Structure formats: C-alpha cells, structure tokens
Length: 176
Image 1 (cartoon, rainbow, N blue to C red):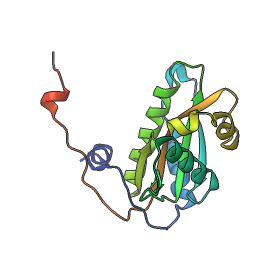
Image 2 (image 1 turned 180 degrees about the vertical axis):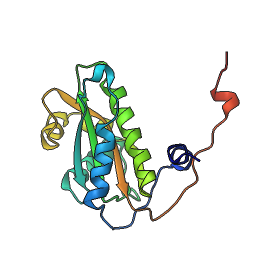
Image 3 (image 1 turned 30 degrees about the vertical axis):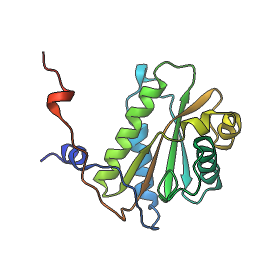
Image 4 (image 1 turned 90 degrees about the horizontal axis):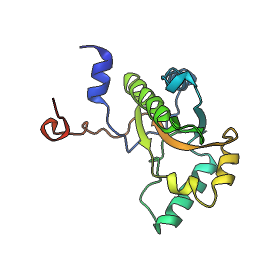
C-alpha cells in the first residue's frame, strides 16, 4: 500500500508522550512538511512558532485557557505534555489564512505519522490566545505583524496508542 495512504489510515490523535525530545532531523522534517503545503494564490503567508514542551508560554496559555473555561486542576495540559508544540499563525486580513494553516497542519500530522511520531492537532487555545491577552501572546510568540493564531499541533514519541477514528460513509458522504 502507498505509504501516504497508510499514514492517512493509521493517523490518530496522540494523548500521551514519552519525555524523549524530537531529533533535529525529525523536527526539520515536520517543519518542512508544513512549509511545503499549498496555500491560496501561493501566498505562503503562514508562520510557524516552535516551542519546546517546557516553554513557559505554553503554561501561560494553559492557565488562560483554564481561567476562561473555569477549569480547576485539569488532569493534563492542552498538549498532553508533548515535548514539542508548533503554533501556526497567519495574516489576519487574508481570507484564506485559516484554510492554509489547516492544510499545513495536516501535512505535518501525516509526516509525523510517517516518522512513527505521535501528534495532536490543537484548536482549544483559540479563546485564550485571541482573547484579552491577544497582543501579549502575539508578541511573545513572535507572530509577524497583523498575524493571528490559527491552529497548533503537538509532536512527540508515543507513550499511548489509539485506533484511528471511525466514520460513517453513509451519513458523511453524498454521491451525486
């Protein structure tokens, strides 16, 4: 079977990682996979901010997310203690930035699966990162001017495995 098709069929969200960091080669492959994603009109306007899992900004984002959702003592953080998190931002004035970021994050997720790494696509920090502290987080995460958070992804070596999600072709697909 084609290894791309196999990666699509096998990929699932990883919610448990070992402490082993990514190698430079693994991280570079993941970033390159995101950079090679197509973008509308080939604008290539998306930006990647790479953070190690122990970066204090991730703790601040977690705290703000929990404050907004009134969550006390969560069992894990939003990235499940992964050793690497990539936050993707895009030009806030460009209509297709969210779509372009989504395509890039999927390229990265499939590349991670191909490398045998776990990954978790993250949207749950949207309220925290775009809320009253948006300017602070945008500056701290080195977003280019007029860019805003679109999506994030965590990476690491799997400590747990999960079967890919199920679907219902009869419900989710209309063939005309």
